[in-house]
Figure 1 (spheres, rainbow, N blue to C red):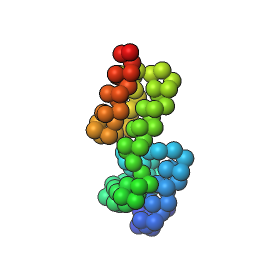
Figure 2: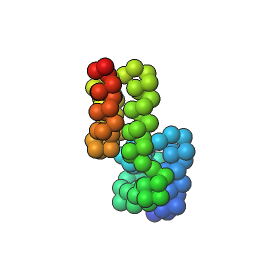
Figure 3: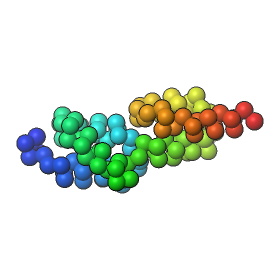
Length: 107
């Protein structure tokens, strides 16, 4: 597909396909869309914002699910923080949840 043929609906469908498999951060979606369609960050951001506004994409939901899964596997807060870095989640979206993990690990 040529860049000139790229439509917002194509980007939306591709992003929704990604989200149907698992939660993704906004950053992860943008990277994967760029790999698939080339460089068009404005269009990607526009469509991801729409998905976020509609509740279909949530960095907070991703962070909570990730932290829950890693905590259940016995991972501590430092290890979880390191594993979250590649998704480039905003710290505030998972900071409170990590504090709970820290307090649980101390007991």
